[in-house]
Image 1 (tube, rainbow, N blue to C red):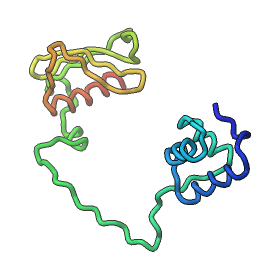
Image 2: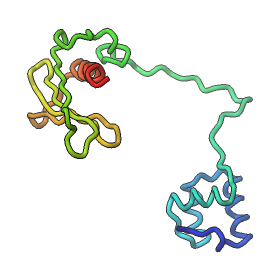
Image 3: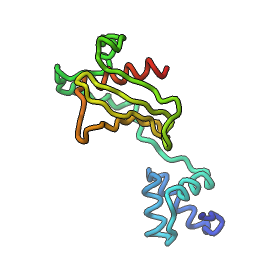
Length: 161
């Protein structure tokens, strides 16, 4: 861990000038190595900024500037969105996507279970320790259709919730 007490007043002034010029953590980390000869981790750099009571500038638009116009992206009319989830039936029997939850989660995951998609393909679903949802299909390379994915997510929320 880097100790800020080893910095000279001149080095601290240099770091403050970098921050005043708009340097971000990665910039400060790089300059600490190249200009001052101190190799710091990203976390050490973050602690350095806190220890020196510096506040990094954020890219906030000026009030005098007009907001940039956003150009609407091309929308694929066949692509399902989150808004379409609500129009999917709530009954798993009509979507033909079946979801079960394991009574005891598999090792290394917070929750797990089985899913059977409308085409009869099945697999194991899981929520890992980072909260990411995943599906491990029985047939390698299988990918369910988009409507089945949305129906699976909706049904999973229903059975877990």
